[in-house]
Image (tube, rainbow, N blue to C red; front, side, top):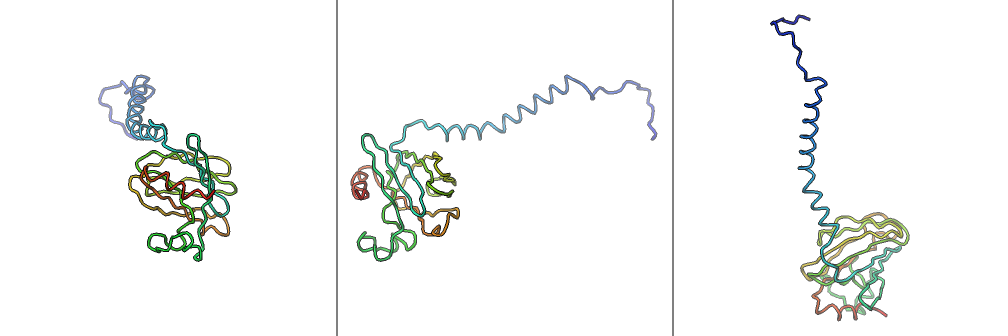
Length: 198
């Protein structure tokens, strides 16, 4: 290999230059911090809620139904939610198929107040399941047996929201709909009295 000698015999000190390596490292760390700051800020906001929840609901998945347990101040009750059979429609007064669709409607819904923070602890009693709530900006939650997963929702519009179990959990996996009914706070006590089968 031929190198033209121009009379400069001093070699550049870019190799093993401590000051230059320190500067490159500091600049890289600063760029990384600038990139990571917004996601960490959003994560911190999601994890630490500034306000206490209006209510806490423990949702337990069983084969093949859901159990909702409300924990209010001085009042604790729970009930099961099953997909009802067609002959149960009249008895439950859920005959409107556009409001209570076939294979999605349940006998008792999870009732939550609108415009209030609701804490949901979701777990499973037997196998892993997956739940998602796109209407409330709720990402996919895995229900691990006897390990509660914490989530927060705040429903704005009163309505009935439908979802299903996302992970194959056994024979009747397709018949485990999740129904959330959001109502105004003033109607909440009436709905809980109606919902609570005990």
